Each structure stands twice: as C-alpha cells, then as structure tokens.
Image 1 (cartoon, rainbow, N blue to C red):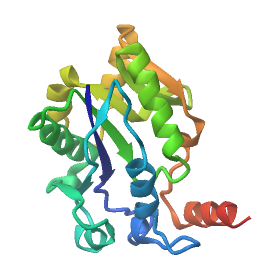
Image 2: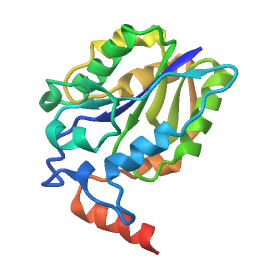
Image 3: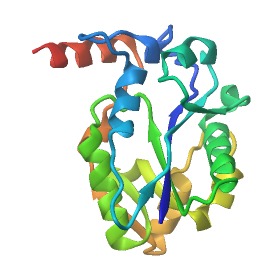
Length: 203
C-alpha cells in the first residue's frame, strides 16, 4: 500500500491578520516548519510505503515556499481564496495522478500534533482498511486518511465545506475508521491562539 501525505497550507489566515504559518517559534522553527517536520519524520512499515510529502500552497505562497525544505513538492491551489474545499480538491487531483492507494490530509495549523499522532492514525487505518479520521469534539475531522475510492469525490469539492461531509457520510454507512485525537481540536486562527501556544511551549 502506498500512502501520499499532503499538508494543507493554502489558507489566507485572514483572522490572524498576517502570515501565521511563517510565525517564528522558540528554537527558530516556524508553524509551517513544525508541521512539515512532524509529517516528514513519519515512517512507513512493511505494509505501507510512505510517498514523499507534498505541501499545498495558495495564499502567501511566495512567503511560505522559501520556508520549506529544498526539493519539497508543491501542490498549487489557485482557487484557495474560494474556500478550503478547493485546496482539498487540488490535493486529491494531485493524488489521482500518482499510484497512491490512499491520501493523508493534514492541516498545517494543527500545531499540537506530532509524528507519533500521525503514525498512530496510519496504524489505525492499516488495521481497519477503511478511510480513517481523527475524532475530536464529537465528530470526525482532519487529519484523515482517504482511500483511493474517495479521491474522485474529494476532487469535486468546492467552497469552504472541506471533507467533513464525506467523513460523516462514511460514518453513517459504517465505512469510517476513527481514532481519538484530542490535540487536533486545537488549531491556530488568531494571534491570541498563537500566543497561548507559544506560552505552553515555553513552560
């Protein structure tokens, strides 16, 4: 099985009033760099080959691209300003052009998640064989691993709905695997969120 990890980093961070993913963290990394590091350190297994990480960029692409490790594959999201669904569709379309059996979608502003969280999600997906999502706030959400059968529907997404509708539909059909991941309930939308995150990292 081949798994393609894609980090969604295409938003305009309007509520943040700045380029939040470029914000520096104690130690010299950035929010974007922290998420890239966490995903880049994930290792495959005898059952799953992890393909090289791709990063989906849209808003602030010119600022964020230089922050990525040299050689990182970019998925452009030209319609990022129309909503998250367009960026997911761009990621799914890119996945369709590969031989990946599944697509791991992660959000770059999920700053609390670490390599072990992603590895646990992958293990849960391997065990169930189903499209598998993180579970938090009483609902499925990102990060999530979508099997190839879902790529077409993901590629048709638009607006700002994201993939939650697909996840909930699969859940109703009892075709969704899930893993409790409370850290995914925290993302960084505002400067106050960022300040709280930095203060917890500094303690």
